Image (cartoon, rainbow, N blue to C red; front, side, top):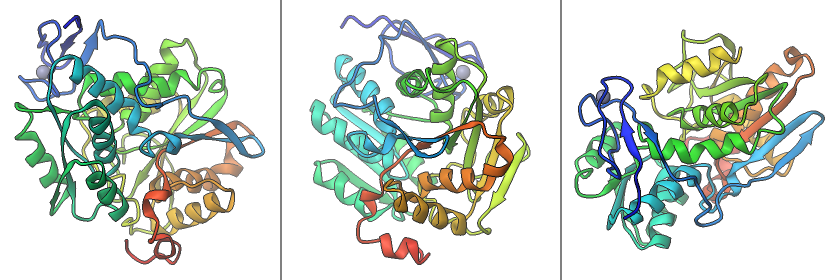
Length: 338
Ligand SMILES: [Zn+2]
């Protein structure tokens, strides 16, 4: 074992030993930072996703083309590559679906046993694929129950802990460095739940020395953690948000940094309900972009602000694939509950 990274807690000052993993601060439960982390490298082909122009001056970053169909592969691939090197035999995670599938896929590839806790309401396609790659799928009544049950196994298995882990965030930074040549002068629309993607993009861009972009968080009205913390640029699509099933975390651990990143770039938040998510979903598919409803929300947000953006370039991060919803596409379009 040649890993010498150290994890530390900006909140209480905890410092871990070299090469010792903690999913969250063992003293105060807060999110961790890392130093001397090895640079991320592709494990199963994650990252390097295309940026395509789908509308004049508007680009989509196709994160749904990652190996398990979501941006989570960046953070999960990096985390489990290190888990393997640290000698872990199993991985555990709680997830609304995408992180669970990503963990299942990378565990299968790297030879780790995987235990995936998801709410029973997770998309059936995600649950089927989690089982298909040989992971143990445990369904819970709520998203919170999934978190509590997965945390109990954190001593025994490597817990991905995407909202608090320093390793996961390190993997996410590659999404920012890949945008380095395109971000200046752009509005970047990011579907936001735990905030690891938006924060990762911001840190990646900062480290690449890029500025002059605005970060626009796109949130579900059911998990509107930035409400009252950053400017609300729009609130669209009614009050129901049952279709935004990848955006479920109401109180993310890195909420302060998330709000700061949005504020410091002069951005804001768009709160999205089902009607707008469906409109975005239809529009995305009409352009040939197979984005899941929680990702298509970014397109709905962009369309609602298009007139106000003063011809700035727009980059929409399309986070997850609608291929996981096959069999339910008609339900989504007709806005029946998933
Ligand atoms: Zn702490």
